[in-house]
Image (cartoon, rainbow, N blue to C red; front, side):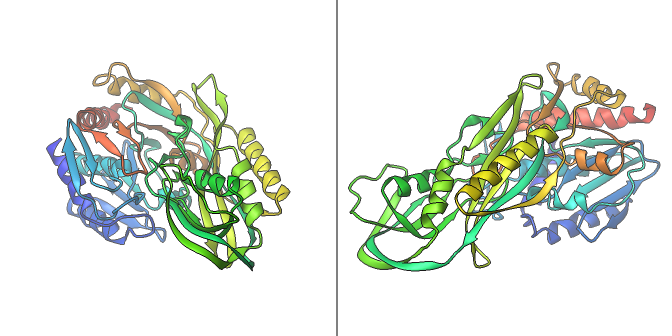
Length: 426
């Protein structure tokens, strides 16, 4: 356990936000070579490491979502949990990477894959083309010690875009902003009805008859927005602001507002954030959608929605609904990166993983997750691969409230050690 946490602390000292992972990539390559693994790095920054005759493949991604002060991470250990001061922690998926590093220092006859840029739409794994020789993959990117994950949601990026042309208009001008909403993971926490800063700010402006001159909101495509800011003008002075909205008053003045201000605000207000339907069989959300980002980009005003579903039908349905809503308000709808759902299937391998996890977590069971896991992409590339995912208890990933339970890390570490030891007989 001490070894794993030492590795994790080293990881935290190396900047590794998505798209800024080169230093951690080089660190992991050097580490693998030091422990006599052969190493390949592809053009996407994915790392494939092999030693001996592999019986199992361990897999984790090495980029992290940066919120708050990240990539500057100041670790805080309290009451059996590890967190970071005013930043995301990166336990998602740094703890998984650290566990694999510990196994590389102890075992031969396994292969390891560290994927890059997972947090930006599973980008790295889409570009991975090396062969997984063992055909048995254990992903370490789950966040509940009680589950062996054997299925996950598919996802789709949806952009609503309009012209950013402006017109001059006078009114009472305010800069208003939200900067302290909790934020969170738009998959595993979407059912919690966490407040979306973009929606709350837009609804306040619209209800008070405002027009926007500037608007920026959200942090990442797969995070529930914790922050949003706007410059807006109003016909009348605003006498009462809710506690969660901070403001600066600039008096009565002329501003250049968006000609499409009403359409933008009305679409945001009408948009239904959160769970669209529930999967009773899996006991988790079936389909959901999050409004992730809002602001001007490349000369256009853009809203980015991130949809998830446990079924292809659900994914197609929420994409169509969002397209219709956007077009009703005169915005163009463009579909971006899409990943297919990983349908849950029991296998000899998943039963083997469950049996070994139950040695340390007796209540563990097979399950699925309403979030994206790279296992599904690997299986799409090679249908012979059997996969499962486990991980320690991590709460509020993709936010400044992220924390990991240390006792849970030890349980997962011990389970992985048992799994590798037993993999020789698979």
